[in-house]
Amino acid sequence: MADDRPIGIFDSGFGGLTVARAVIDLLPDEDVVYFGDTGRYPYGPRPLEEVRAFAHEITRLLVEQHGVKMVVVACNTAAAAALPELEEVAGVPVVGVIEPGARSLVEVTESGRVGVIGTVGTIASGAYQASIAAMDGPGVELFCAACPGFVEFVERGVLEGDQITVLAERLLAPMVEAKVDSLLLGCTHYPYLARTISKVMGHGVVLVSSADETAFAVADALRALGAATTRRTPGTHRFLSSGDVAWFADLGRRLLGPELGSAESHVWISPR
Ligand code: DGL
Image (cartoon, rainbow, N blue to C red; front, side, top):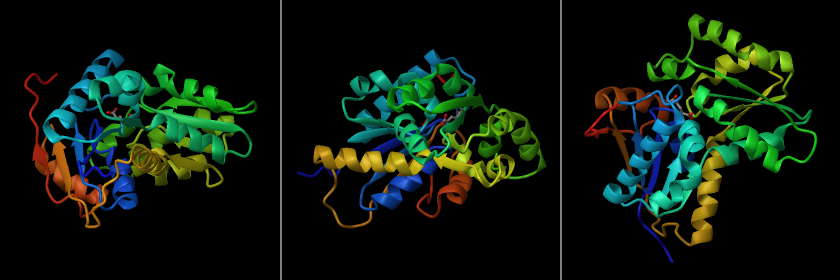
């Protein structure tokens, strides 16, 4: 059995490109449709109800207009807000970033003191706290911190500099103090700031990104469902943005690489 339909991936903006990169690398023959909701980012400060409605809308768009065989929620905030019911909305399998990231965090820690950083929405939702509590044996102590402002730097294409360092020193201070030995980047934008985050945390702290783990989860799910493509030619990659498409193509190419040749516009009928 084979299914040649594309994999749909979405995020509020550029962050999910970290997941798209990992999916393209692991599954080069699969077609991918990526949706960045840059016209409505950031999701982090919005009420979870609103983010849930956005997640439903994008999922329907990917399934109904782009015929995807699977939806990858490459946004922690959207996954925290909508994941349990999204599969019903989609009518196709849905993979999120929270469970794969949490699993890999629990696997890498040696001291048992672990940290998760994310948007205000993700941290306040308690999704990571619940996910780690459900999987850990005894002995994992979890510290969480929201990092408002990080996403905005990435969306502006600013990935390093004094302003980010000063903000990171302030926001990550509780993590440094807690002496975590591993830190999960619980927002898909954060891997683009990894150099600064690592400098602030100290080189002994392992940074965990959910991108690779999520790609493995996608590959496992396709295999289990018998839904992987059997084509043995490079897949096609389409990128859609609800914001400025020229900027999406420019910055997106810098972040993801040459597969992002151009971006197509999607205009929401009633943008919020
Ligand atoms: N990249 C998204 C996440 O993983 C959120 C960014 C935003 O606040 O829009 O949570």
